[in-house]
Length: 194
Image (cartoon, rainbow, N blue to C red; front, side, top):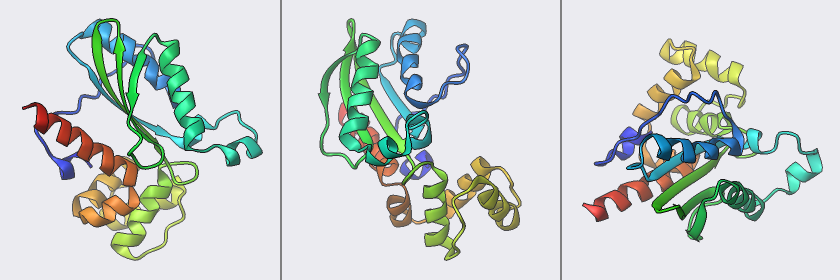
């Protein structure tokens, strides 16, 4: 998707020696990355909603709103000794732009909770509906079958790339409002600084 919002900055996907992290635990990597490369100060985290609500009972999950998630993100960052300077309140729900500090390091942290109700497959399914006018249930198996038939790719990642490459920006905004907002914000921030 970042290619559709191509700007002058690059996204780096580090391989972690800490093992696979999901949910808010991915925020722990800020400290690790800064230890490895202190020049990095901008972070983008994409987190499936299903990993935020794991272990919650159904009622708590259903009542979880944007301010609850914001509080969870703030708590997690504070527990990692990251001082929050400002959180932008002019973002779509479940998209957070955070200015912070870790010691002397100035940080720009973008956190996006993906999934309409639970997971990113819901957003992918919505894009398929908008682009192809086909309703696909938002389950991995159904999306994989669609991608295999349409793009000869069973991988959700590869199929989604093919779908996004051909998608209109308007349909991308409608399907992934938080992600497109954040990618625009990153591009705008970088173009202001250069």
